[in-house]
Length: 138
Image 1 (tube, rainbow, N blue to C red):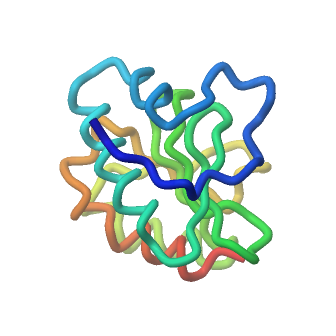
Image 2: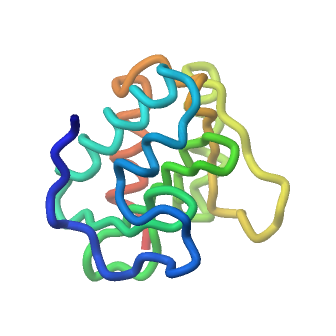
């Protein structure tokens, strides 16, 4: 069982059916999705100034920053990278041959890059993307 820190912020969506990271992890149906989500959660939760809150997944935000930089979402079982808008296409083209990346078509998601959890082979394959989102997101 994963040990969770007290870094959860009191921003949890009151309408969410999840209240803890463990409940979110249990929502992933395959063993692979569950394993990858846990590895990513453990890694990101240890990054400097990274806090999280629960909504339709686990949303990570840096303390003192306005927006979230990463989401482990139960909607579609995806990892959502929230990157600076002006760098999204550049980041997509840099990593598209390394991991199967999707760019949402919804104009509200113009800062977002999505990867299905099932398409992530290991934490290592997305660690650099996580670092970019963590360091550069407003």
